[in-house]
Image (tube, rainbow, N blue to C red; front, side):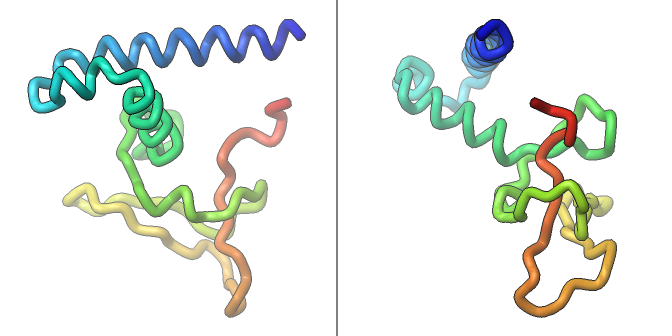
Length: 111
């Protein structure tokens, strides 16, 4: 389907741009930079564990625990950053013991 093709092509282009950007980091070994499986893993970690520092921002922080939050269109938590850049998960409504913490991973209109 055309939409799926578009998504796949965008993902391919983003991976290529990520791969190119990573080349500028001297502390990443050439072996890592040239290993396709490792490169895909790193790309996926960055994409699934990064969040904008504020809504609409182009600046992202990597937040390793945020991917443990459950997806939901009614958020009961929000991510905030303190002055040192540390991420905080803040309840925005009461949550009962055992109730999942939810944060939307995307727009509800995303097909």
